[in-house]
Image: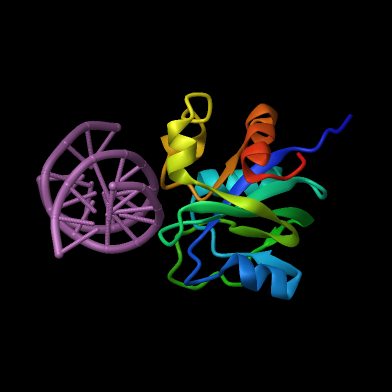
Amino acid sequence: MSSRSYWLVKSEPDAFSWDQQVANGIEPWTGVRNHMAKANLKAMKTGDRAFFYHSNIGKEIVGVVEVAREAYPDPTVQPDDPKGDWVCVDMKALMPLKTPVTLATIKADPTLAEIALVRMSRLSVMPIAPEHWKALCKLGGIKA
DNA sequence: GCCAACGTTGGC
DNA sequence: GCCAACGTTGGC
């Protein structure tokens, strides 16, 4: 049995892509400036897994990352950023999806249409229920 | 390029 | 403290 939690994180591939994540191996996940997303980052534990989603370009889940370091102060905070104790985590590239799972595919599946990715389209860090994780892994052609 | 959703800001 | 205006995100 596993007590690990599951997440989904979004990135615009123009800014930071899956290929870069793979090339870098472990990479800080910075730049989150939304309180709900921050709360999700803080809830992550080492060994938790997250889908890596490309927003805007692709609009698909392309890979799986693992939390390599739990929340710590985000070094990229700027003086004009919104006020708050912003944090980041370190993510480690784990594996690509054999078949990327597109937003259209997720929306077309009645059991997946309820996930936060669809319901709260602007949230950049969100939890994924274990059963949804399993279903998405299956769609992606990888083992959960 | 447009629009919807949502967070933030500022006037009152 | 309310609410309209505005900016940003992200899908289409």
